[in-house]
Length: 244
Image (cartoon, rainbow, N blue to C red; front, side, top):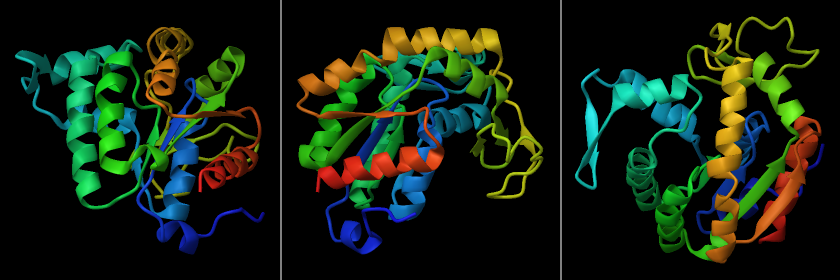
């Protein structure tokens, strides 16, 4: 398959931000990995990056934001219940990392972040200041609730790097990650009840961020997430091309 962008063309441009939005299972992480590999972007996936920080933190560890302590153990419990982490906690870690990446002149693809209005109100202005509004592209990947439930309850991820592996006829018997060779497992929070909670959290807290993006002057492009991975990727690249 021939894609409409080349590495050489993108590398000559200023670092850019690509924000991929969509419900659980819409393939944000997969598309982010493809963009990362093709264009040498930094793959920022909140659930993995902050999830790893939480897992590795000391049980009594915390961060202080706006005079309040947010304990890693409490945030870990929220994830296990399918709920979103506390926005001030997440926002603090995101802003620190994004500022660091901008200093390194690194382009970034964010999968599913910002996740809340609180987070968006603080992160979007920072992104505009660090990268410029013309270099920010927001893509909404549409997916039905039925398909989201199916994909999340059947997907696997690897133990080493948490690569998500979609459930298809080609991967149904796969036992090891094709990227790093580690064992594939089903996440503890990928059960029907927890997924339903995550879908409600997405509709209640995350989807409204789209309206915030528009108020901030960002354009939103919508693509069909129920296509094959290759076709979704082709649409993502076409959106990026349209902004150049």
